[in-house]
Image (cartoon, rainbow, N blue to C red; front, side, top):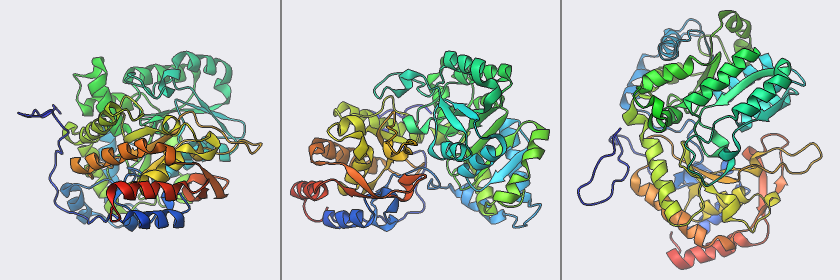
Length: 481
C-alpha cells in the first residue's frame, strides 16, 4: 500500500482497519512485576498473561481475526471424516499455490514432526538457510543434523542488505557435490525467524531450488512467515515490483516440492498443513497424519479455525492487510536506531529485534544476555518479549554451551493487534532500559530441560540486579508504573 501522507507532520504507520472488539489491559506496578518475574523463574514463557501489559512474545496464534474470519467460523462442518470445511481449505490452498494435496496438522511444529519422521534417518543431513528451534529439534531427535548456509552477511546485525535470509548459493552447490546422497531434504525458511525475521528473495529461492532439483534433493518451503516475505519481495525486489501479491505467491509456490506452514502465523488462525506436489509421495506420507495428528480431514485442527483460516489466506493476498505489520516494525526499528539503541537492521518481519549481545556486552554469553534482556524488559514496562539467542540453543554433546550466532530479544508484533500509541510506549521503555543497561546482569539455570529448554526452564539472576533495576525504574516513573 502507498504511504499515507500527512499535511503537517512526517508520515507514521496507519492501521488499515478499525477496532470493533477490545480486550482490557493491565499494567502492574513495578514492584509487583518483580514478584511475578521471580515466580516465573525469570522465563517470560512462564508469566501469566493477566500479568502482562503488552504481550510481544510471539505472533503465533495471537493475531487478530477480521470480522469476515469470525463470521466464517459459523459455517464450519463438524464432521469427523469428510468435513466440507477441509475441502474448502484444500481448494483455497490449491487456488493460491497450485498444489492440491493437503495433509492437515494442528500447527507448524506438527508439520515439522511429520516431515522429519518421513524423511530423516540417523546420519542424514537437512540443509537450510537457517534453522528454527522446533524444526531443528525434530531433525536432531531422529539422529539427523542441520547444515545452515545463510549468507555470512545475513548474520551481521546492522546492515542494509534487503534479503538477509538468502542462502549462500556457492556453498549450497559445494554442499550438494559432497552430501546430496545423504541429504534428507533442503528446507528454505521464508522469513528467517532466528536472525530477525529477515526475508529471502525470490531470485535466491529460484536458484536454490534449481540446484536442489539438479541434485535430486526434495525442496521444502517453510511458509509460516511467508506473509511478511511476500511483502518484502514486492517492495524490495526490483524484478517483482509489478506483480501482485497473489502472483508472487504462486511464483514462489511453483518452485517447491513441499510447502508447510503454521496457520498460527500464515492465515491468522490456529492450525497448519503440508502441501505435497507429488501425488505418490503425498499418499506415502498420509499414514503419519492419523498416527500423530487426527483424521485426514481435520488433522488435529478445530474446523471453526479452519474456516477462519480460509478467509485468512485470502486476506494474506491483500497488500493493505499484510503491509501493516512490516510498517509498524520498521517504525519501531527506525526510531530505536535513531536513538542509538542497537537493533537488527534492516527491519524485517515478525517483530523488532534488539541486539542483546551489543546492548548487554558486559554479560557473558553463558549467562544468556538475550534472556536477561527479556526479563529486564518485563520489569521495565510490563512488556513480554522472547529470547532468541544462546538460551534457545541446546548444549553441545560435551555439556558446553552452543553460543548462538545472533543474540536478540524479539518484540513481536502480532498482526492487527497493537496501535501506534502502544508502539510508542514500547519505544520509550526500550530506550529507558538501554540507558540503564549497566544495571542488568546475567541469568543461570535452576532447572534445565534437555530439549527446547527455553520454553519451561527455570532461571535465577546472577546477583541482585533485578531489585536495583526496579529501584531505578521507580525513581523515574513512580510506584504505580
